[in-house]
Length: 78
Image (cartoon, rainbow, N blue to C red; front, side):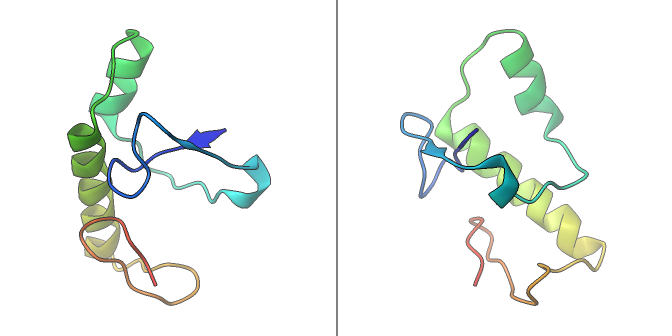
């Protein structure tokens, strides 16, 4: 599995991750998923926007990271 966020980890150079080390969320960036299924390319800006929207939706529902940290608008969490 390869992971990118469009900011720290760019689309051009995603980070290889072990599936067991990645936490799944029960939300999906529909626009990104549709574009990938059609074989299109996703830009870093599109990824950043999708990550930001998913984080905002998560915090709006009162959900924080499992470790109790907080996330900024750019997908960085402490």
